[in-house]
Amino acid sequence: MPGIMLCDERLAETVDDAILQAQLGRHYAGFKGKPPLCLCTDIHVRMYIAKFGQRYLLKRWPGSGHEHAVDCDRYEAPPEASGLGKLMGSAIREDTLTGDIELKLGFPLKKQPRTAVTADSVEAQGQESDLNESAAGSTSKVSLRAVLHYLWDQAELTHWKPGMKNKRNWWVVQSRLLDAAARMTTKGLRLQKRLYIPEPFKPEAKDQIRLRRRGLFQSVASQKAARELLMFLFEVKEISPSPYGYKLVAKNVPDDNFYLTADLYKLLRKRFATELEMFERTHGQCHLVALGTISVKPSGIVNIEETTLMAATGDWIPVADQQEAVVVDYSVATGRQFIKPLKYNMGAGRALAAMLYTDTPEQPTALYIVKPDDSDALIEARRELQDAGRSLSVEWHVADDPIPTSVIDAIPTARRERDLAKA
Image (cartoon, rainbow, N blue to C red; front, top):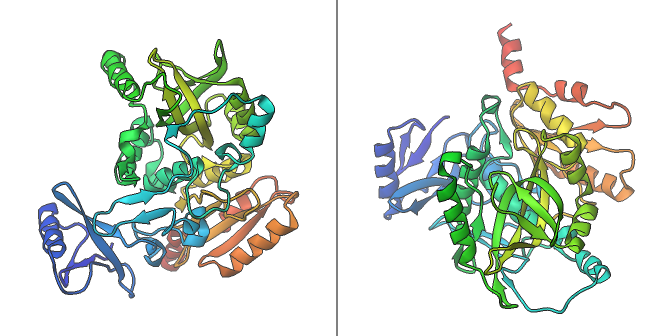
């Protein structure tokens, strides 16, 4: 990378950590010159310094990720390329002094007393709940799905480079998610304190792992109708009938189950039919990730209150359907570099690129999937997005070509351009 500017002095990205920390600390303490700058482009993109404990971190200025060079590690997709752009500054706010990120949640972390509901009334409530893309189109609060997508984005699990192949496992995923959650708050509370993400299971440490998990669960256990809730994020192993309705078994949690009512299960089957069918059909090749809220009884029974589901490829890259999975898997297999855009609060009828390739010359290239049953409104929204976007775009017409290999192969790469120039 070209380097950075700190205290009006140019430093290489590979500078010794002690020197970098000294310069960051000097700038943070009140340097009056230019702000920290990334020198990846002629514009020199502004950044900021945040302090975490005794260390200083150099961070992207909020909303500036797309201003960095496409081959810069600080590059981020432009706001219109995902559902995140509509939420920044309102539902999601980043403090440029501390680096903390405040989330305004669109779901409760406290269960309130309520009367029993029938299956029909649960179905009606589901139309306005996260199970049916709650807060779709909202910019003031984040839904469960938006929190899951934001954690995945901040952990950079939506980013892919060829060198990452076969290097992502649950240990890596959990570690990155916890690091991302450590920077987030909601109503003054650290999200990490209320979020359970299973640690990788080790048979030789199973007793200690179980004690830590059940200690966290018992911290919110209550028999009262009004009770505190925990958030959870884990990979689903199976969902099967139980005496309480249904039970969800999480990977890396062999000795605890998460229970859900028959009504909630019915809603899951309806709202997340595609994700569940991909998970069941691929026999473990597709990861199924769940995020939601749980309540805990003094007996230790853990009940799921709300949840959202997300399918991901074997490399933990989120996908909305099988067509997206084909695009991702082929892109990984052919050594492409990309960012996977996510919807956040966007409704089903909103246009979004399936892929943003960042290994292209000068500008990123967005790939859109065009399906035979796309509505006129979706077609028009996609056209407007392509016209207004800050990237090139290509389309894969599923009806004309059942596989996207020729479309993806035709997208140039900077590496290919350099090889042609040398030849």
